Amino acid sequence: MKKYIYISLAAVCLSITGCKNANLPVPTTDTNQPTKVTQKMLFIGSTPYSKILDCDCEKIGYLATKQNSIDAAEMSFAMPFAFERSFESAGNVNAAPPKPRNIGFAINGTLTKELAVNIVKPNNQFFGTYVKFSLFNENAGGNGVMRAPSQNDASTTMYVPELLEITSPHIATAEELLPYCYYKNFVLGWNADTQNKNGLVVVVEWNGKDIYGNEYKEYVRSVDIITNDNGRAVLNNALFDGIPQGALASIQLIRGNIENIEGFINGEGLPEEFTLVAGSQVILPFIMVREIE
Image 1 (cartoon, rainbow, N blue to C red):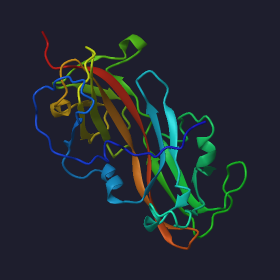
Image 2: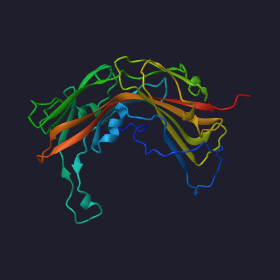
Image 3: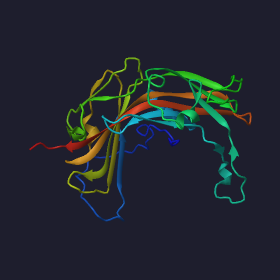
Image 4: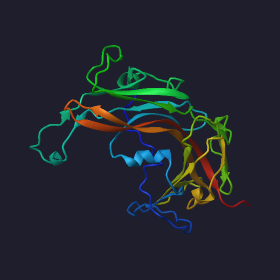
């Protein structure tokens, strides 16, 4: 059974902090030593992905993820939370139990909860096409199909870019899953989508491990925006700052669409706003090369 997961484009939702180029870290086995966390955003300005930060409302939608270039993508769906709890009730044992919200969510007329409990493969219903997303109050019928909409419902239709594939470095076999990547002027290739006007999010992440078996109390995540979805980009060298020679790291490439759904009236008769996120991501594990001998 698929798990209902909270979708977030982690690359965009970072709490961004400045950082400096530091000396290479020293391995440690001291479990009490705190992990040094370095996160930074290289792109300056606003992009369509900024919409996810513009609203504190709940995120709903779907994401297809490939853990590497040769595995099949897996679909995950995020639905409206089932219950609403008052902030005043947090930690109060005498507080009233949470109220059920009974909000339904459908994609192209099919209930998301029906999609989530079945094995759903990414296809042209979800990617490379215009997709209709609908919110409603307890007016869903059987077999996962909505009944006639009411005036309290809300819906929006948006283009969701084609399912993402990394084409360069080209990975065809399991033996090629960890390519060596030289940090200067690294070229990343993918399947272009000329209809995608949002660009892509690229993330380089290192969790402190290397090919020599060392573990560092370090965590590095750097984020940039590729503005043109033309299938090829020379990555900013600064994406690899703080990642040492021989590190086991990853590049995450993400593209999708984001819209705020407004005008929905919940079961309490109150307006509620949601952020809709739909897209795909591919993860490319790699071995960091900083020096060539």
